[in-house]
Length: 150
Image (cartoon, rainbow, N blue to C red; front, side, top):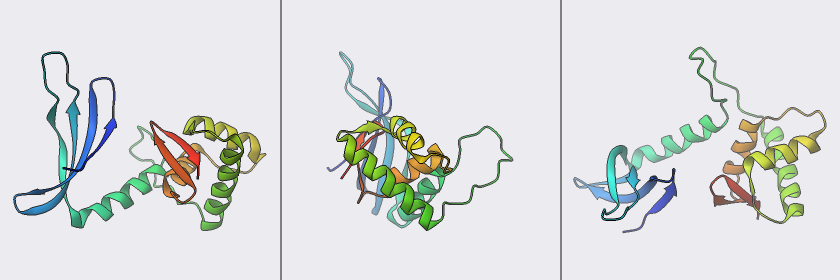
C-alpha cells in the first residue's frame, strides 16, 4: 500500500495513506509509534480518515494556516494573505538566494538570509513558510523543514 511517513519526534511519525475504508476512498492521516526492541510499529488512535472530497479543503486550510502567526490569543484576527505581487517578489528573491547558496537549508535559516537581503521590505516568517511550501515549482522540500531551489 503506498504511503508517506513524516517524522514527528523520536517516538512517533505521521503516516499518510490513501485507502478504502468502509467502501469509501479516504486519506488516512495517523500518528504511528516507531518499533522498539520487542515491539512492532503500530498506529495510535490519534488521526483522521478524510473523504477525498474534503482533501482540497484541508489543503486550502493548511495553506491558510501557514500565513497566520501562531498565537495563544483567541481574539487574534485572520491575517490577510499577501498580494500576488508581494508573493511573486518574495518567491523570486528567495529562489535566487537559495540557488546561489546551492544546498538545502532549514526555513528558519532561509528566513534570516532573506530578511538580511530585503533591507526594509516587510515580510515575516509566516509569509516565508507560505512561499516555500506554496511554490513547488521553485522550491523542493527535503523534509524536516529544509528546502532548496529547483
